[in-house]
Length: 382
Ligand SMILES: [Zn+2]
Image (cartoon, rainbow, N blue to C red; front, side, top):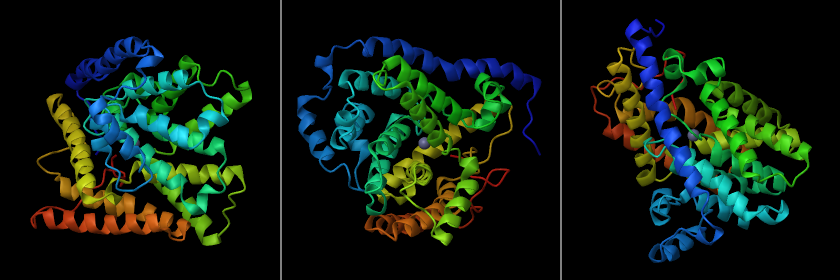
């Protein structure tokens, strides 16, 4: 049965759009005041926490990096602080002759356009994905082949991949006739919005204005291709192509096209790597993503819309959602990633955590619960 929209819910669409947009509008006001800070205020860290945050950054390439702690130590500026640090140690600021003030302005815009009221799709998730992406870019199989542009694109795409996420999924935007759904013709609605927003902020910040126009255009296009690859409904398409390449052993990382494909896969892995983290961190992410699903379910109930799969707090437990998510999305992808890395120490570590976390969720799950559910088209929501 297709989701139905009653006349009541059609009337509700305007109200919902208002609710979903209000945060963004407010943030634009905040942004204009924040970005006007003089460069002397670049270091926002309180002195007491500065040393601890700096110490954490010295271990930024380790897999048990606690992004929640880092966000607290940086007073909610984890994304800006992390990305500037990664750009620095990767030599990107020097290589592309980036103006640090413009870089800070751009990253502040991106961070501010994430909705801090979203339990999951907020700037901490973006920082977490960026940190994971950095770890993947350092993989021995990949690192030696990557150009500075590849690293730049990988980190930028990770940082901005969910910017201005409204905290509800694409089916919700379609059934409430949100303007973004019609703008992007019901296809990769959120991802298209994340990409176009990123391009808008890039241009507004002037970060790349010193580069030739064809380079800037290429950056914008490649960022789009990377961000659009995070659309979970395209999971099988990417997984099958990845598997085929590995079966035929025909990936040639000297080719820009193949490196771009691996960057897409790496970003997809980084985006869904929560179950591969240590249990203490993984569990927090699981609770956050389910809380966001449940909030969507509550909104749907409130406006007499059919409750989306996985969004019913009464029927869909965190453990069941996580077991399904791991089994259908995360495991198949990371099994191939492990093959690609041949397998690296990091890949083995991630698979160990994944297996451990799945067992933990199975133990938590009560015996009378139903099995993990997929959405109508068989795909997991994320
Ligand atoms: Zn994401």
